[in-house]
Image 1 (cartoon, one colour):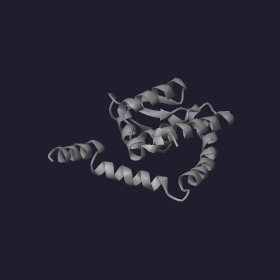
Image 2: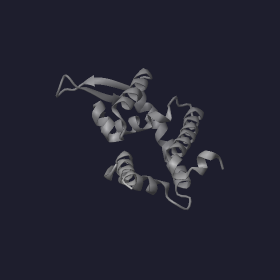
Image 3: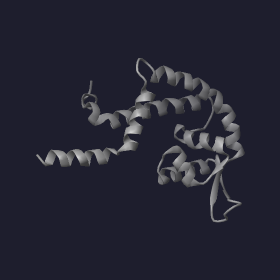
Length: 162
């Protein structure tokens, strides 16, 4: 066990990032070995646009739960790879809507069978005696109710009053 592991809750976000990076690396390797030039970090954007057909950046950021700048960066990368195109909204000419390109649609047909297998692997990894997914959902709900920062402030004030 290393020092980060010994820190428990204090280093949880570090450990989750480490786990996420490991999983992303493996998933990107799976794509590469299957001849698909696709980065795992693009998955949420591709998946959401495959189900919603077109969305503006703000709606996409809200749907995924990423910050606006993060979405802009991902979309920029995907536009460079010709996976996403930007079109002017028919309803409001000032708005830009994002859509998958035909190249992305073709890629999706190759990705979906891989995702089916990955879903099964994820169930094995995430439900190995406890449910990581349930724990994440519970944590997200707790943070939505009151932010980490809000809880910190409250506890700091309480401790400093004594």
